[in-house]
Amino acid sequence: MASQASWTRQSRPPTAAGPTRWRRPAVAAVAALTILAAGCGDGDGSDGEAATDTVAEPEATAELLDADAFAGYVEEHPDAPVVNVHIPYEGHIEGTDAFVPFEEIGDWDGLPEDRTAPIALYCRSGNMSATAADTLAAAGYTNIVDLDGGMNAWTASGRQLLDEEP
Image (cartoon, one colour):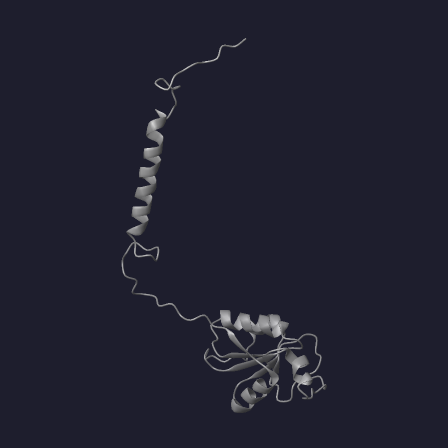
């Protein structure tokens, strides 16, 4: 039978890190130093120097408009391109200026150079126009409106769609 090691409180087994009584204070000291070092910064993850070359810009997003508000917006902003981004073609709203597949909106040559210029988007249900709006917002466009619910909401509001394919 193997012999069991016996030791008393005065003589604990040796460890690679030294006596056990020194471990807890050492861990606590390292934790305290880490917290102190983290607290010395200015909270932005930098080395404390003032940032002078960049200013955070607001995140660009599209404004969802119901059918009434979308109709009013288009009327009030006659220079805003009205773009049907739905594929395949399933009709369009009178006054539509362009038909651009939603996944190609970022490459559309009709995009205004001025990224603050208004752009009105719609599709059949709102999903494709939401994707197109996200693409434009990521490209820096800041004045995007999107017909909430798309052509489905348009017709539900009593308005008509045109069905002559462009």
